[in-house]
Image (cartoon, rainbow, N blue to C red):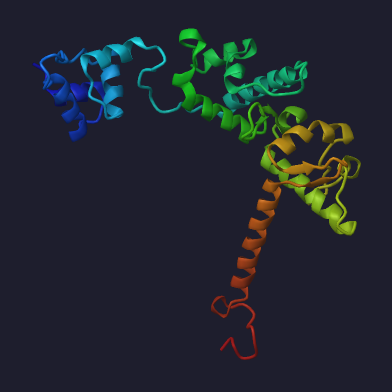
Length: 292
């Protein structure tokens, strides 16, 4: 007869005291009315159900294992999220951004974005989804791929193809979609924030409009946007990711993310300045003779 330890090792589950104790309770129930568990084949669906129950701290009774194995909503134990190349993420991001943009344009009740699941079930993504190893299960479910979906979505977001916030249906195309080239949103967001601050410095604190920053330049002298049409097209992702806030009057203000970035940079510069002027680092002495 296979031991509990050997069975746990065969399934890849942790051979912990807690797991062994729960299994022993299932194999040797105190109640005569409860059917003892028979250890299933380590590669079977029943074995996956037993392991899932153990991980939840539940006794894998015969009834609980049967219910777990028969319920398609409970996915099998999966490996850690996959890792994809930047080319794969860019391909996924391009297709996703294009579909999300068309989805928003087609909304008769107003421009709202799709859910992640709607995106992954969309026909244009079917082929690349299969290439990436993400298959829909029972009733089109993708629950077992949530870690993989998160890796893909956040990768596309960092590469500038997609943007979203905590608000429902906020998913929208990012800056790379509008440039048809890689433009990480952090880079573009910083450039827009810099253009707003520079305009305010030059105009007694007045906030700019789209006309004002359509031809604004960044810190190295490059245009932030191609023209006003390009600037207005990127309004959605800039507001969604909280880089800017647009008032009812059309004024553009720094958003919470831009303000946090500015505050962090200011604090970092203040610490560096203090360190450079500290007597211990050989900087400028704060008063005559302090440098020794």
